[in-house]
Amino acid sequence: MQLFNSPFFWFLEGILFCLVILGFKVWAEDRCVPMPFWKWLLLVAWMALLGFTLAFIGTSLGEGEANAAVKGGILFGIVVVISGVGLWRLIMIGRRTRGRDAPADS
Amino acid sequence: MAETRRQTPKAALFKYLSIIVVLSAAAVYGRFRSGPVLEPYVHEVFPEAARMEVSDGIYAALTEQGKLLGWAGVGSASGYGGPLLVIVGIDTEGHVVGARVVEHRETPLFLRMARVSRFFASLTGRSFDRIDYDYEHVVGVTGASRSAGAITAGVRAAVMKIAARKFSIQLSSPERPFEFGILEITLLVLFTIGIASQYLGSSVSELLRWASQIVGLLIIGFWKNSPLTIAKITALLAGYFPGLRWSVSLYLLITGFVLTVMIFGTSIYCSHVCPFGAVQRCIGAVGGRSARLPTRSVRLLRGLRNFIVFFAVFSALIVSKPALASYEPFAVVFALKGSLLQWFLLLIVILASLVINRPWCRLFCPMRVCERVLQDARQRGIDYWKARRHD
Image 1 (tube, helix red, strand yellow):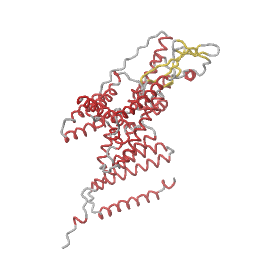
Image 2 (cartoon, each protein chain N blue to C red):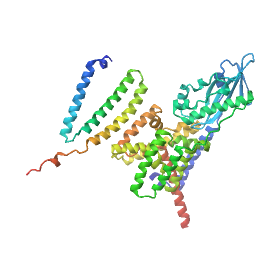
Image 3 (tube, chains in turn red, cyan):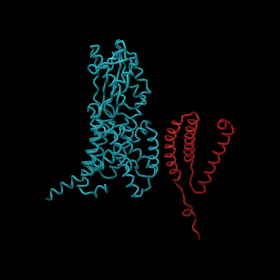
Image 4 (tube, chains in turn purple, cyan):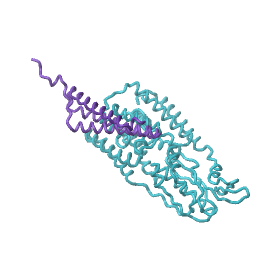
């Protein structure tokens, strides 16, 4: 439990967060998915919601409230999954396939 | 429907008669089995009582030496799943010494929460003519207004009985108001929209369906938490008919459900009113609900559902607790209350709704079983009438 209170944990989490965002950027460019600012905003908001859900489960378990962890996990988990699916469909808007957009070989 | 179509009229008649006989026997057994033994509850209310005498339906609690400690009386009121009995003890000075629920047909969850609430404790020590029937307090804790109302009404009935017979004081009982408000108006409007949609073009009716389902979700679901459940049907099967004055919404729901299936062959309740159907539809719109289940799996799951519904209703009737039949996770969605099993059931249904079109309605909902039975009866009636006409 000491690990979660230490600056090292938050330092590690910050690095991982940056890596996830960077990885997503590379993935989106690779798959020709346009990422305007509103998609980034929604993505960050969704990640905050995911983080909140995990934190809720973790802190509830830490305080010995297993029932709250299960019920809160299910409740917020459902919201995370549904919003995640909706976000995925929004992110995929305007996706270009390489074959269609590439210039025809002469 | 397909499996019932294949049955000959005689086979179908035998099947339905068997079900009716078994359920009726369970209901009769549950209804007329011996009532609760009250002495232990009187001892709970008067722990120092050594013996008790019953006269005129009221228990007199006495010490070893014969000194009168007080009286205990039972009050009854109509709850969510049927009658609810409450025992109240009052000492010779006219102060309440304790109260207990003796018998109920509510969900165990509600009573666990009601006990946690300090409603009964708040009664103790009060003079019987100065009781604060803190209805809102219990409702606030549990979210189960009908059950909470039944507990307070039961306490009031018991107190009035003791006051009249032992203190010769007639306490006035406020008449329960005629319940016709936003819930009842919403139900009438949504059923009317659903019926009108049967005669309108597909695009207009689809638009109206979305609108009515959203309204149903907000008002019948999140605000009033009053969807049609198998427990309500089971309560009627068990012979518990709550007063029309304070159960208008219940009778509107059941009448609307049955009549629309019998007239139009489809349930307007399921398509336009049910708030849980709206939840699944909204989630399906987000997820795209593109998956198709294999026909064999659908048939298997529907068979399993039919068995679960029969078993749930039979068990609830035989123990005379209609609320036990309700396995739907509606209260979890609309009031965040339910057993752990219902929470997991909700999780599965919600996740499945993302990829499958209304999985609860198609595969698990007990009301769909009722709809199928009514549709089958309707179709057989039509076939019979046509055959008679040709003869």
